[in-house]
Every structure is written in C-alpha cells, then in structure tokens.
Image (cartoon, rainbow, N blue to C red; front, side, top):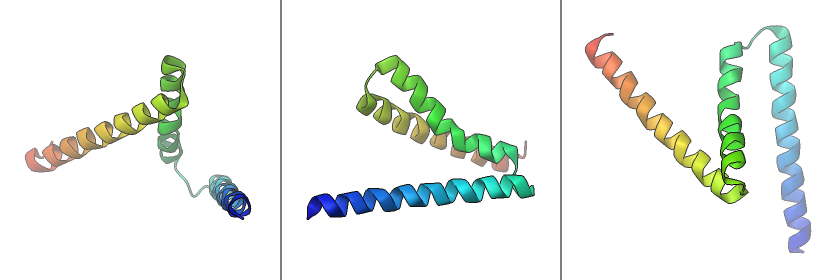
Length: 88
C-alpha cells in the first residue's frame, strides 16, 4: 500500500513540475516574463551542479546548496536594508 501512495505522490509532483514548466514556457512565448527572473530561478540548480562536481555526493551537494542559498538570502536582506536606510 505504501508503494502505491509513494508512486502516486511522485507522479503528482512530476505533473505539477510539468505544469509549472509549461506555464513558464507559455509566459515566455507571450512576452509576460522577464529573462532576469527566469535566470534567477536557475541559480540554485547552478549552485547544486557546481557543488555536486566539487563534493561528488548528492547529500553533501544538497546541504551545501541550501546553506549557500540561505547565506545569500541573509546577505541580500542586509544589503537591501542598508540601501533603504542610507538611501544609496
């Protein structure tokens, strides 16, 4: 029973990802998306690819990617706050 539910869950996740990709492609074709935003969505995949090439293991690469992205988020929040505070 568990195997069926796990398989169905993975299938639903796959269908959701395909739907998101399809909607994204449609938005790009219609000119509703900015290419910078699309590029920003690729950053975690690029970081994961580089860390996987460096570490050679998926779990270590995943943890490094998560830590790197969280650190980048904190730095970005601090810089945005400084920009708002000091008006530069």
